[in-house]
Image 1 (cartoon, rainbow, N blue to C red):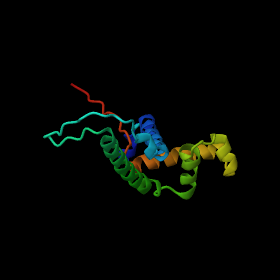
Image 2: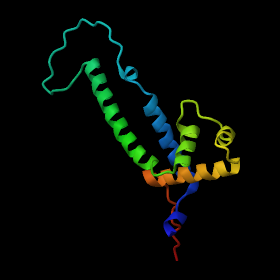
Image 3: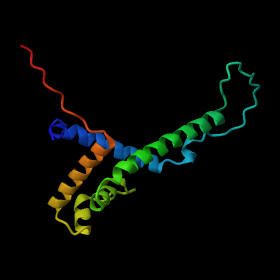
Image 4: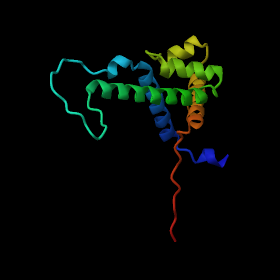
Length: 147
């Protein structure tokens, strides 16, 4: 398992935490956030021969549709990686990272009836496995020696 030795643990942890924040962001966004404020504007807008869309409402609808495509793609990829974890690992990740108000580590370990040391071990292992499953692991730079 030489490949695992070349993984930068701290950088990988930052990368997976970024993915988890992205998950929560997608989870919390609603269509209303992307809608423009609609106020009456009485102007004559000449047709464009380039086929471009200039309406704020149409632009918002396009952004909204693109946002949901990205979110759906992200959730599909995330879920495939997430379900490679054990049930206990998934439970810890949800409680610590994905809930609207994440619990403190000591609260999770107490609720799951495990020691804090075991909790930290399982959590680290779960984040590492999730990073590998989602392919966001970061590798150490090979030191090049010149002679």
